Length: 298
Image (cartoon, rainbow, N blue to C red):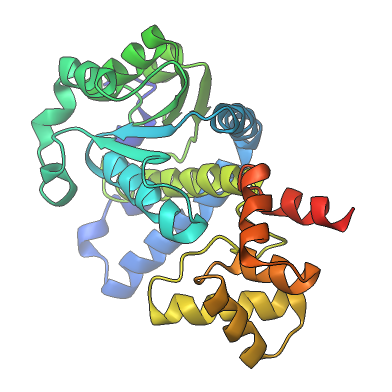
């Protein structure tokens, strides 16, 4: 075994795992999980550089793609699918590509990760030189992901790699390598555990920070949230109240007038403008809410 493949090594804390009680098992797992955030912390400089570059790509009108296989691919799809309802962005702004296609989201298609040509083909069909592509692989050497990243580089897209081994093969093919060294898993080689948790944390950082920088958050409020169900409708009303200080009845009235758009409702209340003027202001500032707010204060 490659000495750099730390994710495949045995964890000394769990060598007799099958003899442990239920409580002992989960205590070991919890203890190992506690180390993940510290591992991610060590890579903050790498993560920062990658996010800053991705922000510039999206500000220019590009898109963000995640590509992975197995757990890594599913985590990418999960993160991408949650961006539209959370941040009110188009469904094609953040995208997930997984080895084996949509069927692999629910069903393990393990041999799909070995198809380097499929990775190249899947990226070639959707990615342009205006986009950013984040390759996700715990081992750092998954052929499907490396194939996709190599193709993304050839077409001129910005490339980022997220892996959990030192000197990962993937890091050689990307402009911005991120290596989260979480160490051996509780169950040897089961990288859906610590490695998966680390990847989820990094993807949370990427998408959330990018959206904040694109003006989809005001303070720490999700002003771009889409009121697509009852819970989110209440959240929109609450956000309007938080920002403007109006009572619930007034907030609800303006929310209805703004078709559930918290941003427009807030601008209408704070600056006594029409819905049309609020939407025009947002469009002028490329839907960047804080900038729209500042422009109306002048």
